[in-house]
Length: 106
Image (cartoon, rainbow, N blue to C red; front, side, top):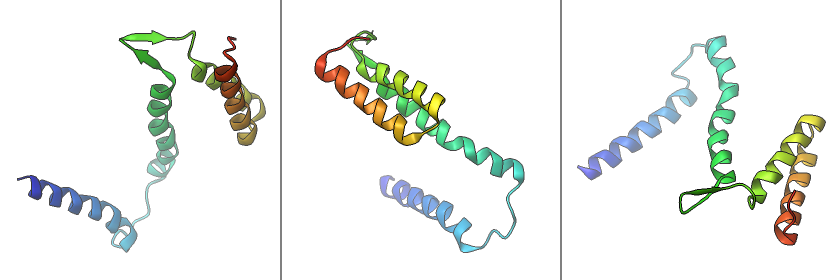
């Protein structure tokens, strides 16, 4: 039973990747479907980022000692103001390193 499930999942995964690349689908995608593809990175990355920013220990949610959250807020403000990815990454990482190593509260 387990081997048949593994083989079936492998076959489905292969077909999902092979069929669009093989040219079997000669139809053009609808504009609505093409337009919806731009939201996939946002939908995938948001839960990962929110989970990483939350510190939960012993069923308690910590905000005061959460340097990742403060650095993410700083990086978000920089991203909104400058629209520069390099500046966002540099200031976000620098603020996290400074706060976590020097124990600085905002």
